[in-house]
Image (cartoon, rainbow, N blue to C red; front, top):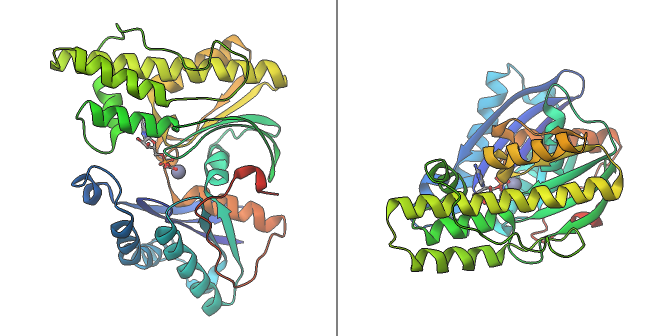
Length: 334
Ligand code: KG4
Ligand code: ZN
């Protein structure tokens, strides 16, 4: 069974074809980063319009690159939320229209379920049950995963998501958009000399809070001489604080659940220092750790095609009604 996956929840147009037996056939991504960078962040209306321009050509491209015809596709999976409403609607409406024309089913996929399942596309995929740390621009979640759709929320950010904190800290350091990768690149040139707080690690529980790190960054930056060295040292110290905090919470989640498998996914999981800190803690806890390849950490169509295929195999077919939900708590998934 060939599943076409469509991702348009934010600033990347992603498409992919996944086959239930052969695995990932092909994927393609168009990033809007250049367009939004002029404005220092994602402009929702521009994002929607660009998805409209790029989505159908990308679908045509991967079909022809894969030497497949429209009639070979058995189902279409699309990101139905959470995300920007206009952007989601482009993917949802395109998926529904194609599915109606091709007379095939659609599957509405939860974006964070896509991220959560992305490591399944790798050679050594994790077996259920496992703990998942999902760190993206909009969410920071610790989830106990028993199977597809069987998610127990262990903890989440009470304010900014990890990626959002990276983006805001980068803005304060005048690094531009997208902040996460820029701050991370600068951090490699600095030293973590400043002792940033490790928020919410001095009390029990698995929730996170990252907004304090942002204020700490601003105050530290304003009190500094604002030299390139100051910026690099602040970036390194900030990044170390986020990595440490995530590692402390993952260690707690491993000890609390007794599960010895940890999946880390979402845009921030592309960060090398965070990968290293989590690999280190997992080793100490005799826990296996799984990451998607870096290009599947950030938004992409492959994870949506994969999640949709699994949902379809579980007979999760839906009507032709267009479904898009900008806010969609993951623990409401079944
Ligand atoms: O998963 P994603 O592509 O989109 C959402 O679902 O939000 O995540 C994007 C987030 C952004 O906040 C971006 O700055 C962050 O992931 N990010 C990074 C890195 N690459 C992307 N943060 C830190 N280090 C990176 N290397
Ligand atoms: Zn995402």
